Every structure is written in structure tokens, then in C-alpha cells.
Length: 497
Ligand code: GLU
Image (cartoon, rainbow, N blue to C red; front, side):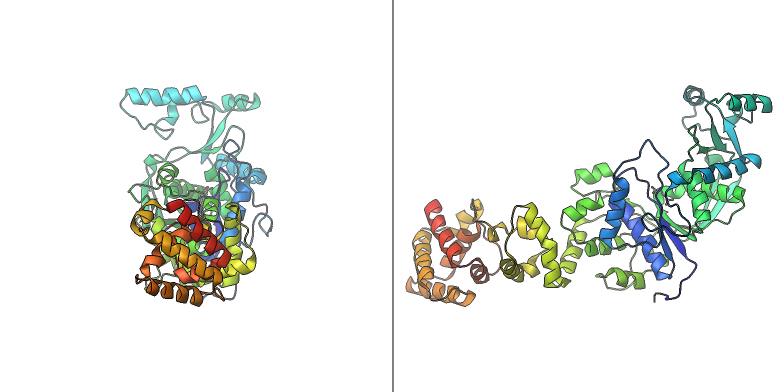
């Protein structure tokens, strides 16, 4: 049950606007949202925009729109404000510098003046000694140009002269860094494996690590829920919390999303396999937001029951972090299609009409509403995607221009021309044109010609739709209307002979 009174739980989604929101990012946002709502807490959106080099102009807008499309409303963040504003890291620089100073004063951080060439030389030296993975740490820092190797006066004069410098975290040489992860359980890592992370860059902007920790603390975040790719960063954060004298939030790292062919699902291999990457690509491909959300919820979590189809509110009720798995989960586009079909079927007709209009227009179709209602009435149960109407059933909106070759081979017989011409004649004269009358006329005609009804049914479908699969033939004829059907029958006779 969702708690109605507000609890102290505060969860943030903290994307960097370095690109459009991708499907994995939306999964993280969803789990954050579900957890916050489940516990009657607050859900925040924070824009981590300190990396000016990788900043993408319209990414933030895309992230906000994607969340709105998916129905993940936040309580504090861009556009809304809140008691912990600003929610843009680029506007919080003074705070990060203040805490970097505190770390410097307490001896947990130090200035470093090394140039890129000097850093490279250090790695080259290590490599010659057989160490390919040398990093700036307790071992190498004493050979470098920093406040630990220079005198206080030297440091001061470099600073006074405006020499480019960074602030680095002073990671202890050998200590065990431990934290409890709600999903991965106890995580322990030796500090010797952690580098002296840069906290403030030479442009005095913070790195992700410093800004993230400072903000999670100041924004009173109680639970950090994020992808497993951030797990290696967490020990650095734990050290920062410790050195700043703060209690870290509870951590929960979501399992990796795996490619259907194994390995982590990267942007590149997703694209290769035709898996959309950005959330807006799912929207543009006609997936319903409810289906995408339902699918993502199951990408790492399950309710422990047989139920699969959930609304967002239903997910909030059912969600529990204990049921999030630890191992990677395979991305399966077929499963998304299945969810989409389930959610499409549940949509009331009016909602469905609204959702199919733009894909139809994108294909250049603009049918009137009464007609569209009849088409959808016929096809609702067969639809897997809102755009199916335009892509799989274009013949409801324009005459077929070609006939499926295999279908012609199989269905177009010697007597097809004669039978379809006769059928067209009769339909033209029939008193009314409905599902029932088109069928009665066809069956009577078949009997007269001592042919099975299939002799007329199959070529008629081919003539009218250009294919040999589709909804019930007579239902389809009724929706298309007399004039269209007769025209298409005669045209097929002309073309196929
Ligand atoms: N800015 C990071 C990102 O882009 C946030 C990671 C985190 O949640 O700590 O995903």
C-alpha cells in the first residue's frame, strides 16, 4: 500500500544532459519514482550539468519531456523549484568550492599542478615497469607535482600566479571501504584500487563525484538508486561522505541491461540490432508510454506473482526494492511489443483514436473521424502498435498499388477474373452494402458458379488489400464501402488478368 502521509524518503533522478534520455535512464528514473511513491516520499529531478564539454543543448528538454510522456512526475526540480533549489548543478558552484575547501583544510584533498604531459609521462613510466593500469594514487602521487610534494610556499606561489591546478581526493593507501547496497548487499573494496579522484577541475567546476555527494547530502536524499555502472564510483563517494562528516544515503545499484546477444547493451550494439536507444525513439515508433513503463519495470524487477500487466499506479503498489535482481537482465524487444499489445487493447476507443492520429498523419493519412472509428473498431484487437494502422493496414487509407507476389501465386486462379468481375457487378447493384450483404452476395455467387466460397473470398481480399492476411473479409469490405471495393475489384482484374 502507498502510504498517504509524507515520509522522509527522498529519491532523486540525476541525469547529465550529455545526450537524449535513453531507455536505461528512463528505467532508473522509473525505479526512483516507484520507490519514492511507494514510500510516500519525494521524487526529485536534478540536472547534473557540470560537464560543459559534453553538454548537449536540447538534452535537458528531452529528458523532461520523456519523463512527462512516461508519466513520471517529480515533486522538486526544474520548472517546479522546491526547498532545495537550484536543481541545476551548474548553478551551485559556490557550494562545491566551499566543501572542496573544507576537504583541503582537513587534509583530505590536495592541490595538484600536473600538466597533461606530466600525467602521461607518469603512465608511460609505469607501463615501462610493466604496470598498464597506473593511476594517480598513494603510490604515484609522491612523484607528481602537488601540494604533498611541493613546499607550502611553492604551492602558494603557484596558486598566486594562477597556475592551472585541480583539487584531488587523498585516498588512503590501504584501507577497506565498505558499504551496504540494498540490491548488491555488502560491497567491499580496497582503497588501493581507488584513484585520487579529481574533485575540482582546473576551470574550478566540480567533477560528478564531488557535486553528486554534496548535493545528495544537501538535498537530504535518503536513497540513491542508480545503474550498476556507477557502482565503481560509490567507494569514492563513501570516502567523501566520511571526510565531510556526513552519513551516506542508502545505496541501491540496479542490474545492468544486457544485449539479447549477451554483453552489456551499448548504444552501438542496440542500434545494430534495431533496438531504439532514446526514449523519444520509442515514442516515435508508436510504443505506448504505459507499455514502455511496464516493460522497464520488469527489466530488473518482478512482483513475485503471475501478474505482468500493470499500470503505473499498480506498479507503485506492487514495487519493492527487495525484489530487484542482482544479475544483468536481457533486453527483449518482443516482450515490449507484447506489453504494448496488452496496453493498447485496454485503451478505451477515444484514447486509442487520439494516439493513432499522429502516426497516421506522419504517413500522410488524414481520415475523417467517423471512418477512423470504424477502422479501429475492426482492428483494435489485432494492433500491436499504434502505428500498425499506417504500416500494416495502409489499404484502409489508400488503394493498394501492388499485390503481394506470393499471395498472387497462391490465390489468383484462372477463374478469379470472371468471379471478381461478377462479384463487383453484384455489389454495385446490391440494395445495401454491409458486412452481412457482402457476404450473402458472395455466397450466392459462389453457389451459382458451383465454386467454394474461398474461390471468391481469397482473390477478393487480395484485390482489396493487396495481401492475403488481415481482418475478417466482410468486416473489411463493410468498412471500406461499396465504391472503394468495386473500384479495387475491377482494378485487380485489370492488373492481374
Ligand atoms: N549524473 C549521473 C548520470 O548521468 C548520475 C548518476 C547518479 O545517479 O549518481 O547518470
